[in-house]
Length: 450
Ligand code: PLP
Image 1 (spheres, rainbow, N blue to C red):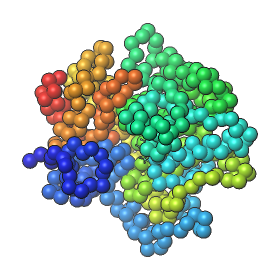
Image 2 (image 1 turned 30 degrees about the vertical axis):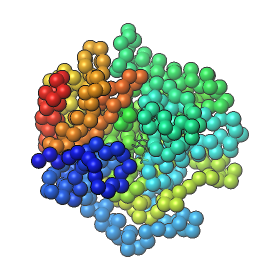
Image 3 (image 1 turned 135 degrees about the vertical axis):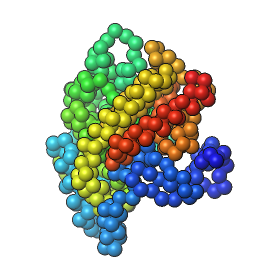
Image 4 (image 1 turned 90 degrees about the horizontal axis):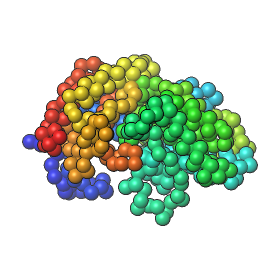
């Protein structure tokens, strides 16, 4: 009996054009979920790269229960609350030096919106009122609200709403692995970063407010990692033109890549950081913008940040976030993500050697992706009609493995899938995932004639 059946669904909270009907979830624990028919699934994508500490964590649940008994909501203009204060203090110790102010929100889009609006208010506060343009990368994903969408490079999501958004400039994401030229990877990294300088000059440096990027790409690029040279060159360029650097760490942050922040792999010094997903680890909607005092003070001196959300910083969400951090620290889950990520990547590389249609394996820690190609030497994508990105997910799902996929990459469309299990994963479970992927890819190859 296949676990997924054709749509339509009778009543649904999802307003998607539903291709397939998924079963009703029953319960979850560790890296596993069960549906109401008793089928077990490995959560090989941590939901949407969210449940970093795994499902059903008793410490988080008990902490939330205690908080429920005390106070669940107190409006931020009426009261401060201890869970929020504690969490802000603790999270700032993981941030680059000087980033000591935390503005809580309830999700990734809100975190990105907050960064964009805060950057603008900071520019106003320091007398740079002409700066408003935010340069982003294509492809990229920064959220579904109109501001975050305006800096998102993902045509299917942005096109319907173009008339409602302010057009923002973009530069190509550093898809150096696709380039077929004589430059070294490091030279390519510099050339991609230099596109930022070209864009700033073309837009007029006095009008450019910020550059937003995911230090390690999420679903839109399939865990894209730029050549090392890229990161410091981007910082240099931003400094040269007084452009703020915003790191969207919504997916790459809170340990997923084997360091607390994705940018920590290169000692990055962004001006603003957006966090969410693993921050609340699925136990509560939670996100944050992190900023340095040197930027917050001028905004406070000019009347404060004209922005906020009703649910932001509520005691229950922050208590959950604190307990998530306890678990990350107690079990060294960042270290485990690094170690298990190495293992999982090696398994993916082995699969790539076995299947000629896997052209690239990339990512860091447990934010990993594999890309499908028609031909490894040219990196030509698979034909769109094969729908490989959807089939791979459906085949894996029927085998009890949840993975994530997209059809996007640099200028050309291509298919990739992401494997991003919870950071509590063990060696044996990695091997189990690798075996299930092997079965999945074998079936995919025969179905699609690859
Ligand atoms: N930024 C990145 C990098 C993301 O991956 C996402 C979501 O996938 C978002 C922002 C938006 O987060 P949310 O869906 O929580 O609003």
